[in-house]
Length: 413
Image (cartoon, rainbow, N blue to C red):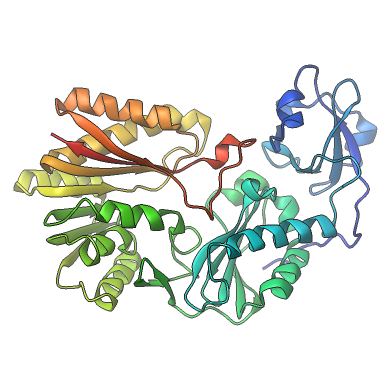
């Protein structure tokens, strides 16, 4: 792994960047992303000083201070903002304070001393640390950088986490597409302490789950669905459950163990995910109720429909479908197609649990998609519960993009 560059100065001397006229309001209001389209032309003299990761001071077109941030000419987000106080520039002290605050807040809801706790400790923009995600899995931390500027300060951040939490090991993961989006030259791997075992074990809703923090999807597990899995299980008693995109089995296993489901069929395209699901079902003594098949979900749903298979509950929790605004229309069509397929194998008065983790898809757009599914299928859909993210994935009111998870629990006639 290439060595991360650390800026040694406690406080970094910023370069001043001016915004275009009438473009300052979102940033005065606390939004942390400054795109190129909002920035006034930059002189060659200033451009010569700007290097990726450079500390900058953002001012309005009239010259009024807006915020302190970090520059990245490789990214569509040219500047990520971190401090809206002129007297508090970006520094190691600011980083340490933000990390400590985020961890302290999680400690009010989670036992951070436990060897089986799984939770998100730092959630990027929601914790005023744009570009940094940190998850705890038992005695290990997973760190994910979605900002080149913060990755350059990796050693500084890891030192703070190590001193604060004293984990056995810290593992680096990189989200797909971040290398290209941020100009990150980074490889996954161990950055401090011991290598995490495969798997690590955590407890959720009084169930035991194994997590592959090294190679599993995202940062190892979908921690954001823990409460939704427990709530969805309340609706499946005596029903056959189809758990599509089941990953490591969370929804289905919770439905079998706590919900009284008659049976669970899990579908996923990943063999390693299904291996975890089978292991988790066995660890929670529901392997006799749970069956898993590998396959493309859309194709498998079609095959199940043709076979005449029907389920009392269908759970659809697909990966993110919209990564750019240009892909929004295509994503909504994808959700529509998936939900229509799900309804074709859902019994009358069945339960549909449909999810979207695409932040670019709003809750209103997701419900409008479901309305279209109802019209096309000719089946009435009642939304019983509208759910979102748990407390360790908070939503920042100044950054609406942090509200990404939509979960609708529905009854379908």
